[in-house]
Image (cartoon, rainbow, N blue to C red; front, side, top):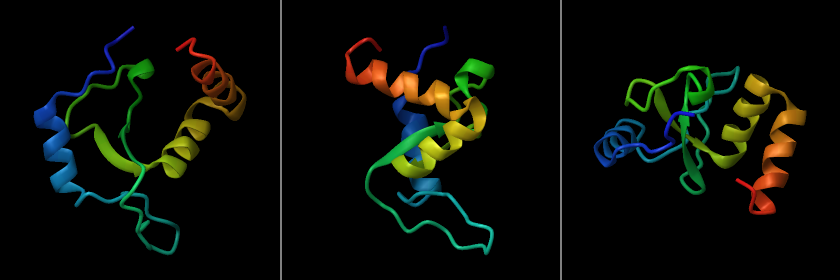
Length: 90
């Protein structure tokens, strides 16, 4: 499986580009104001060949990152991954 490591230079570039804020934009064009609980999200997931480049990574708050993962992989899969992580199996 590909490495989940994101180089520090890429993290800095993404943080600056995204203004240290969630990049989710709703249907009305409103950007999420969250500046806490931010996660680096791969637009094209690692599991689907996505790279850890600034072009493929964006900042999302935890809630919007999980929503994106559920859309990409399905709720059942994500629930199993969350449960495994809580048990220390990830």
